[in-house]
Length: 605
Image 1 (tube, rainbow, N blue to C red):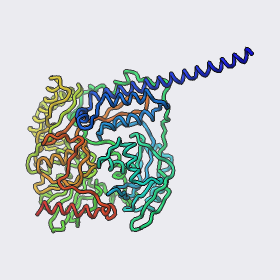
Image 2 (image 1 turned 30 degrees about the vertical axis):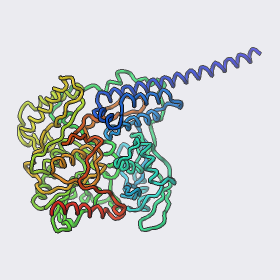
Image 3 (image 1 turned 135 degrees about the vertical axis):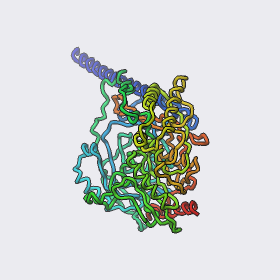
Image 4 (image 1 turned 45 degrees about the vertical axis):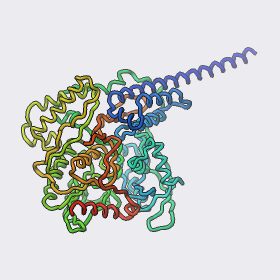
C-alpha cells in the first residue's frame, strides 16, 4: 500500500516538475522575445522618419503597434517559435504601409515556378515564361543538380505560353488567391502597387521576407490563348528546403552588448568621399529589387544558355516591345538599352530604358553618348522607368542633368538625426574643404554628376544644415534640399526636346523622385500609372537576435514636392493615365504601344 502511494506521489511530482520546467522555458522565451521587440522599437523611435506622417495619414502609432505585438507574445496560447515571432514581426513592419520598411530573416526556404503573371481588369495572364537562374547561395542548398533544374524548367515552360490566362491554383481562383496574399503577406495593401507585388510573388516565394513557402506539386488551371476551354496541369514547385530548424533556444535572452553591437558607429577614417555612407544615400526598395531580379537576371524563353558569349545581350530592358521600326540601337554588350525608332507620323523618336538607378559613372558614359545622338537625330524622347526599384540619388541627378537644357530645382527633404549623421556630415565637410583637383575626379566622386564649385558649396551647405539642426536640439531637420539645390544641364550632352516618361506602380524611391522632379519643373510628361510612393532614403540595420531576425530597413527621410506634398505614401500621378488591358497581355502590349505613340504625337505636333 505504501509503495503504491509512493508511486502515485512520485508520478505527480514528476508531472508538476515537467509542467514547471515547460512553463519556465515558455516564460523565458516570452521574455526574450519581448526584449528583442523592445530593441527593435528603440531603433524605430530614433531612426524612422515618417512616423508622424503615418500617424496623420493612417493613424499609425509606434507605441500602440509595439504594445499590440508585445501582448501577442505575452498572451500567446500556442508554442512560441522563431517562425511565429517572425510572422508577428513582419505584420508589425507592414503596419507602417512603407515599402522601404521591411524585416529580413535568416532562412534558406524558397519556392518558385518559371512563370511571371500580370493582371488586367481582374484577370491574370502569363506575362513571361522563364528559365530559372539560382544564385550561388541558393544553389548550395538546392537538392537537385543545376542541369536537372534546367531540364525541369524547360519542360514546364513548354506547356504554358505567354498570353495564357491563369484561372486557378489548387482550385482557388487566381483573383481570390491574389486577395489572400495581400491579406496574409502584404498587410492588406490594396493599392495598385500592392496588387502588382502580390502577382509578383505568386510564383516566387522566400521565407527570408516572412512569406509562406509552398512545396510539392500543385494544380494549375489555365485557359490557353485562343481556346474556350481550360486545361489542368500538375507541375511541382522548385524548392529549397529550410536548413535552419525552427527551434527556440532554451535560454534565449539577448545580452545588452548584443543588442547594441550593430548600432556602434565605426570610427575608421574613410579613404575618400565615396566611402562615406551619408554620400551613398540609398533610395531603393530591396525586396522589390529582389522580386524583379527573378526575371531580369535570367534569360527569357527561347534564349539558349548555350549561345555564344558574343551574342549575349547585356542591355537592361523593360517588359515593353519596341515602339516602332528601329533605325538604330545600342550594342548588345552595352548595359543601357536605347534605340531610335520611326514614329507612325514619320518623326524619329528616341527611346531610353532606365531599368535601375543603381548604376555608376561608367554607365553614365553610355548615357551621354546616347543623349548626344538623340539630341541631334530625334524629335522627342521616350524615357522608360517602368519597374525601376530605385538606386542612388547622385546617379539619378547625373541622368537628369542629361535630360534638361535649363537648371531644374531639386525637392526638399527632412531627415531624422542621430550622432552618426552629424559625425559623417563633419567628415564630409573635411573632404570638401579644398576645391576639386579637376573635373574628372569631381565627376567620379559624384557618380557621373557634372560637379563643380557650386556643387561643392551646395553640399557643404547641406552638411552645415544637418549639423546646425542637431546643435539646436532638433530630431529632424527642417526641409532642405539633399546635397544640391539645382540640377544643371550636363556640359557634355543634354537633351533639349520634348520628353515622355513611362512610369508604373512598380517604380520605387529614386524612381518616385525622378518623375516628380521632371514633372515639378515642367520638363516632361508622365505616362502610365501612379508610382509606388516610397519617398525617402532607406537605411539597413543588422539585428542581433535569437529568433532568426537578420535585420531590417527603415526610411530615414521624407521628400517633399514643389507643392509641399510628401512623396511617401502619395507617389507621382501621371499626366496621361494608362491601365494595362487584357489585349496588352495577350498581344505583346499592342494597346500600350499605341497609347504611348499617341502621347508622343501630342508632344511633337
